[in-house]
Figure 1: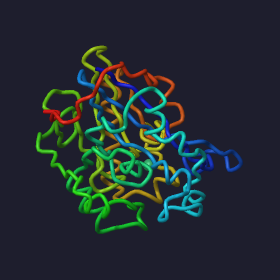
Figure 2: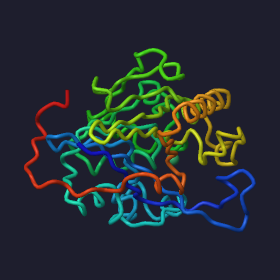
Figure 3: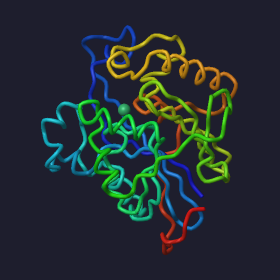
Figure 4: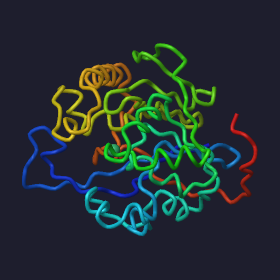
Length: 282
Ligand SMILES: [Zn+2]
């Protein structure tokens, strides 16, 4: 059992766009954050997966150097999630599920690098993404739906931890999805638990770009540009902030916060053993 984090494919952004009151002169490198949960049989679940190898190398015919420059991608494919996992001895084919906080390209592009994984997101997110399309950042939704790997889910578990709805993905408490809509129509936060170490982490996705944005209720220019619904986003900020106060030992990790990863475990080496990917997770 393991829970660790990767930072594939950093993006460049002017500081003012991300941080209220930020400098117009400084540039930040924003990480994309991927959580990796392993079970005793060697199967892996990812929460978000970043850009794909081909997107980072600009060798994808649908996502070339213009898109690479538009997103300010700084790293090449040797820093994609699949490449980072391989470098630590993990097999990308052992990834059985990718859970998307939402379906924007910088969170789900790498689904192509994990051919055995189902792509799990809320049904509301799939529906909105299909309707809004590439211009709203949903480059991959139609291909994922065509691939047969899409797994839309409903947060059927009712109110939980101050959030209006939740879902215990595998029924074992390891991954709880919490309704965190606002950035997109069906965004979730993911509360992750490593039963062995007792580590809990709340992944907030793009609910905010910096902790101060949600703590102070000050919307960044980038959030202005990207928010699906302002009133939903602000309600989600309130719930995330209340969670932070109530559970101050559980780090809240925002996908593009450069400081978040300093508090989290980096990749561990894979144990040497054969992996059986055919057995279902639950
Ligand atoms: Zn993002």
